[in-house]
Length: 293
Image (cartoon, rainbow, N blue to C red; front, side, top):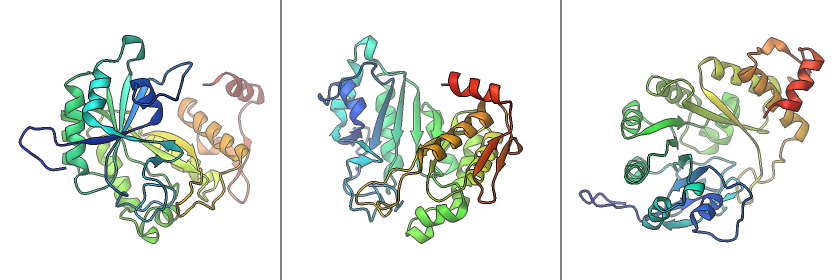
């Protein structure tokens, strides 16, 4: 895109297929309960300049640029998207809008324009998921109405990070710069409004990922979890998804740390770093499992 005075210069964006269905842009998905968050993504012809091994958007990926993880993100006219968003009937209106930002030279310019145009038609809260950006750019996002920012670590250790999205993956990212950017975001956005997410199943141990979750939670950074899913055409297409029990234990551990103020010493790990026991009352534990969201 090129800047032309105050004219809108973005032609296209990508919209997740679920959000596109609510907007009437895509007609083959039906929901019992429509999603309440609208997910859109900055548009770039071709692949992202980053090279994350799990991502079909990666520079060296042979996967479709219409995908992000398992979700399909077709491209649409930005003007058409804005029109559909502005005319949504009350019972279909979104409660939040989340913008996924690919890594390319003009991504911040595009992000600012997307947010500015959306804010002209709705006051819906806006989250931005972005690669690391400068503190000045974070301030600008906050100034124009972004209330939540996410910077994805994905990996749970420095070594895994380097292998899947850093130097060893021919990627532009470093563990240190990601952490610095997340910590700088804490100076600008309020507690709980800085987020990251971790992918379970990239080779980490339970102890490593729960220790990181505890450290991030202590900093008041919100942590989301995803189970690794192999995507055809990516570097990690042959890596298997984590076993369900392994993933569920980490989900439970995350919940106990974040919602029940548990610490790492409330878990027992074996010599391989895997959880073998939750050191809390068994009745309380089953109650948490059966009643938690």
